[in-house]
Amino acid sequence: MGLGQDSGDPAGKDGKQHTRRHETADGAGPGAGHSPATPAGQTPETRQGGEGAPAQESGPAAETAGAQGPGPAAGAAPRDTTAATPAATPAPAPGSGRSAKKGPRFAKPMTTASLIGWTGLSVILPGAAHLRSGRRRTGYVLLTLFGVLLAAAVVAALLLWGNIGFLTRDSTLLTAAILAGVGAVAWFLLVLSSYISLRPNRLTGKGQIVSGIAIGVLCVAVMSPFALAASAALTGRDMANAIFQSSTGDDPAVTPIKHEDPWNGRDRVNFLLVGGDGAGNREGIRTDSMTVASVHIETGNTVMFSLPRNLQHVRFPPDSALGRQFPNGFMRELPNGGLLNEVWQYGEEHPEVVQGKDGQRGPKALMEAIGYTLNLKIDYYALVNMFGFARLVDAIGGLKIRVDQDVPWGGLYGTAGTIKAGYRTLSGEEALWYGRSRVGSDDFSRMSRQRCVIGAFAQQATPSVVLTNFVKIANVAKKMAKTDIPRELLDPLTELALKVKGGRITSLQFVPPEFYSGSPDWQKIRAATLKALRQSVQPSRRAQAAGVTASPGTSTGPSTGASTGTAASPGASGATPTPSASKTVRALPHQTPTQNGSAKSLDELCGF
Image 1 (cartoon, rainbow, N blue to C red):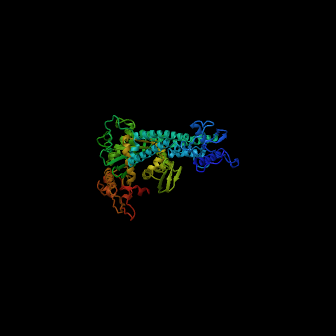
Image 2 (image 1 turned 90 degrees about the horizontal axis):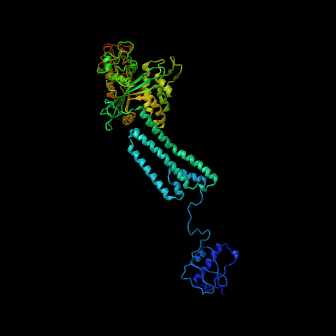
Image 3 (image 1 turned 45 degrees about the vertical axis):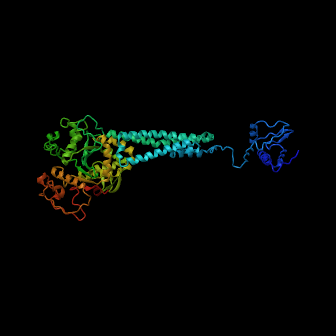
């Protein structure tokens, strides 16, 4: 039998190459010898394994041949399959980079670190782990949903920009808490799904334990911000509902709040801010600090009128029950009584005179007295317990205040401590006693310090500070504050508060030597109030130093007493002039003639 093959037969050449490739794939090396040549007339797919019997092949070619049916019978004439049957696809040689069917791209097991890393990446980029594990459809869906959520958040932020009052609504806070809870569950499921998609069961036993612990910690860390957000929203809602009562009651005297015009067309709104000393060893509430904040609604410019606690024999509107009870002033028959800080308690203890529910008669009486004194309509009041105020100061991290001189505090001789002069950051207790201490001073000196404490708090309680310490502030505020501001007004009130922070705040105190608390000149007080309100809406300018003449015979009518800052005459007020009020006051070139005759900026008075 010839061993040669016609050189022009392509099938013979392919057959040799095909045979050599299969021998190599079967493990035949160079030392195994050359494969036998294909006999003439046989197809390249067969080899002689014996007399007239085709040799069995291994590998893909043999499987292909077996699928096509049995070979020719023994002794049968060979058939030319060159044209009828295409040549078999060569099997890939090892290292050639080709494969009949590619396996999973990420079939190789991941390490513990990479599995944890990809799961963590899915927290900030949902779908990343699913794409890594080859589940592209799920990964793309998660990425799309995340993009939609981001776009919706951006649109909502743009729509609500400048409308921060919307965030104080009851429905908004409740919705925020619910959404935070849903977000916590959704991100927990996202982390769990991402972890499972990476098939941690292919890790070693130790790797599964380590990755399981890490993913558990990650789940807790991911859910914590949502839990804090939900807690803050519910705390804020609880605080708002505890402090601000709804106006949708049965009281016909309450004016309904209109969302399109919450201030009922007014250009000003007046708040009475009361600092109450409700210590455990004292019955009722003693109003130690009383300040009226008159806010210009359009600009936010605010004038703070501070009234001394020992202002005597205040008047009431003549047509009111208290006005009929005290036509000549509050307890005029008592030479040393009838102080302003006694009005609140009197209203609470005499329901036969002051109509209203328990807890409402005191504020009503005080608002009538102060409103008639200043010739202003007091719209709302807010009572802050002074000891609670100390905790509120601690909640925002203290107050930065300029202390002009050492202030000893505690007891009659300041034995508890001393607040040193200079720029200080006061703790809650120090800020409280800085505004309350009378050691080595008097009521009027501490009134000046109190307005600086109030101004410092209003200036330093910025939105960022409030949000950072919101839970602590809310928990303290709902225990220390009381007000008649309706819940429905909290939205526009928040907007107004932001205007106040950006506006100009001035202060006017009714204290000696310009105003005498023992026998006040009511007309002079009203004139000074009107002047301060007019100046607050005028363009800001520096106070001009000028000489002012004040004598016992100086007129104190409504048009002159406040505009010139002169002292009241005995004929007008019945007060005894002091030596400083009976001589000419000459101002130095850089000195204002008085601290009390006209409203001054808190920046100037307190060194903010």
